[in-house]
Image 1 (tube, rainbow, N blue to C red):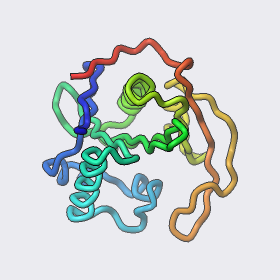
Image 2: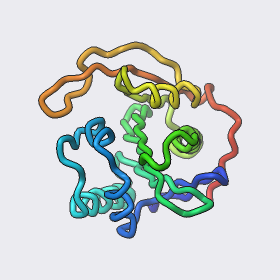
Image 3: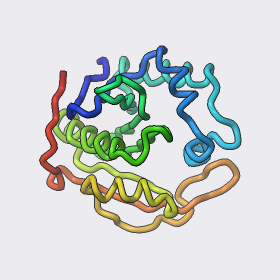
Length: 185
């Protein structure tokens, strides 16, 4: 199975290609690297190439991961990414990221909405969970605007490097869906 192409006419979600390596490396910043556990080192072209190949293999093998590139329709530029990790109990964990040049314009929220609608409609997911650091106000705002419910703080939920961090749990159910337009092409 190849990654579908999902769009709301402002962004498009589709599969990463090896042509995305340079844009991905250039788009990262230290804050993003820290949040995703890459800190103190940023990704290298080789590590991004390996990640893209792994994401592509997961799509092809119908694995647990469904990773999408987030692109702006107008320019075609890579703005970030989003991912679902599927579990056997029809629950999925979502993550998303935007590069600094693409932040503050609502692109993450659009990506989350498209991914939720697709997961509920096409994968029969019954619950999507997000784990967000308590001090990540931007990501917490994305979750709330996308219709997620804050369920509470999970103490020392994530291990990043040598440190355990608290995470705020958010969830969204199919009945929480908004009315955003979803196009698959």
